[in-house]
Image (tube, rainbow, N blue to C red; front, side, top):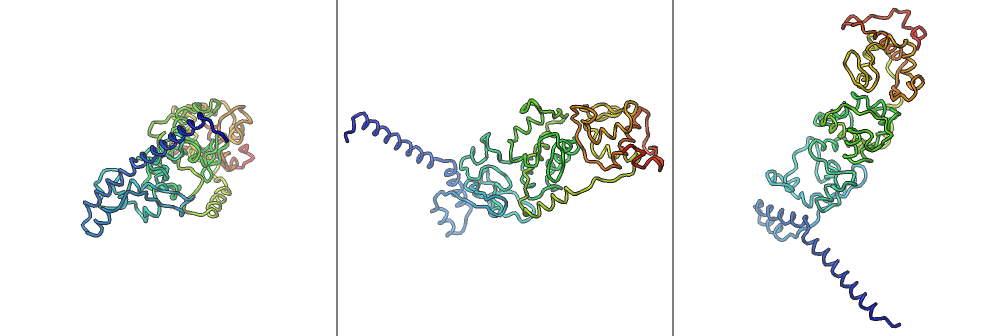
Length: 380
């Protein structure tokens, strides 16, 4: 078969291009950041080593990729972080600059070569450049956790109630309840909301920037969103985001069966029974955090109607039915469907009926007569 001159020339150029490309890859590999970090680490380690045998071994060692395979916690992880952070467990480097600084002590038995790095700090354990390893790619859902965001890693093994050493995470979890987010959003083991998207595994679905933006401007990523704009500070948004990012739907310590049993026990919990009084109605109002949306006498949120004189506007029976099924009386209502016991509904109905603008001082809440505690009498 005769091959034309033009084909021969094309093959020559293709071969040269392939050779050049391979050479460029090899050159970049020898000039990679991880090699430079390894060389610098070995030089520093030689200076800090007094044992002659160890010194000679370090002097003769070539830069290499250190890799851990972590199988004990969730899905198998590949960690190459110690290629650059080579002195993570060497006390002699506690005053060295990054990436050689010794990792601070962690309470409890947290061996770095047992837990690895990405189990707690996230990032991309397979990466060998800063951009890849730290998860700086905007499409990587597990960016390196730094600053207060490090607390998210603790929640993988220490779920709610969260550790005292994680104040930002604890504050974010508290805000999720205080701002009544739980009323609209379902989180297995925490809440049963139905109006908003389920957040049980939100930490595995969305990037941090997306979550922050969605909290600040609910319609930024979904123009049909009915989520109200919450009055939150930058610090509160950060802490709430930390809490949301820790929601992955798994626990790296307990097994699947134990996790299932815990959730099943939570699902079977019955709502709390309370005395049917105005006082317990107000306590239920506070416990559910209705003030996140409703104002009474100038105190509370601006999302829902002002309830200061709602007792003059609606009957007790109307309040109870509205609490039981908001959209049965107010079409398009965004009020959540909270779980109530019958006695809680009756007590809330009494409390809302009492809101007529007349001041009720602490300690002077009227007690409903015994004949009014029956559910038939209260309209429940």
